[in-house]
Image 1 (cartoon, each protein chain N blue to C red):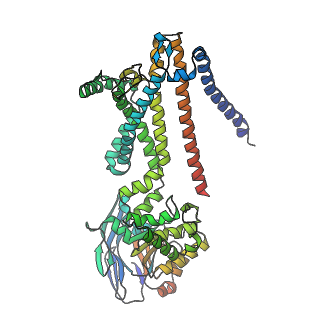
Image 2: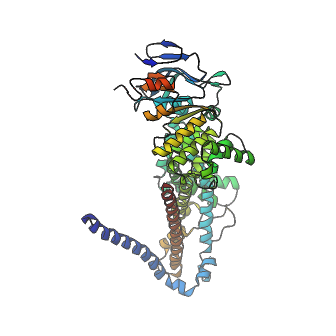
Length: 290
Length: 275
């Protein structure tokens, strides 16, 4: 065995073990710190009850609803827009326009979330308030629109990468058969980029789940479960930020660990899904080689 | 000056960089006039004027970089998908005794590519089943009836000598076929649209000897259905299959053999390219 392999393998194994243990340690740490809450309240109650600390109710159900509705709506807005944008850049736009759009989207990924928040507060929120004549304008709809803007560039770039990875031979084959642009898109590009499209969607979902600033600044932070897209909501991440800023050792404070555990589990599920997709796609391409 | 070995009566015009040959006996299927092609500032084809016979295997040969594949792409306008490429001159095909300038504004690209099929150097079945690979061109052309699609698939697979090998595995992924089978599938896929012309860009270069011979036999049998224009590096193969040969060197016509006998009788032999 080569010396580099002999030395390198244990190092890589050690690094992997430390990384995995750290991840598990974070989970254990949250479970441990949230123990007083978990021992007094069943998990079922925590996940289903309303949030009313003055009445001894520490349920995070409204925040779960707030997070899911915000993330769901933002994905619903962002996915078709991102796919359309990626198709425009890859297939339809003239070369110069495509390059300009691509660069702009790359630039958008670097814009700090707080900037989106400002745009939301000073531009979008008043607009929504005036359009719908209801509430402060700080609601799921405003936050979802901004969140969609935040996650779209990630999705577009992943979609574009997966479009570009489609073998030229497949594209040429369809062109030589008289395929139009639409047929190229339907029969080769979209089916070929399926894995990339799902990956982009999951990555964007992860980004939307983890975002704190937009939810905190624009969603209104109401602690009740929402009934319409014009209701204010508090997300799990916004709840963690708000409680941490004002509290330190109360039972309310302990709820942030419950929120953290849920976010952790969702993120773990997303990561495992991505791994599964990646494994399946590489297995498929390996099978195709032989 | 270009050298021509011709056994048929011909009229022969020569310009500065242009040669125009009309074989009085032949029924042409493709004709190029002053065809020049550029990638950026680099000239790939230099005023090529030539005609190819109907229902024949016409081979284009020559050293690497001489413009053979580019010449092929001007016949179905596939080069138009490339960036920085431009073309001048005229390319015509003859369909139902009518001459048609394929770069005319009225010519639909989809229609043209259905009339002028193409098979590439490396087999390129699409990542779908064998059956879907074959019916997709028909579906894209607007044919929907299942019975018709099924009968066409059987017909072209028989034409491509592939039916007995794949009839029980039509739902299988086309990429599970061997290289030779994949190339025959690609030929069948091109033939399913009943093209008048089939362009073949070194169709056997990525295959072993046995698979290459099978393709050659297939090409012979396809002559009655369409006219074949094939780029090949394999000089022995050209001698075996071609009815006429065009040799390109540096984007110009170097030699033209219009009959199989003239190909075999040439002293220089095919492949004796100029340095």
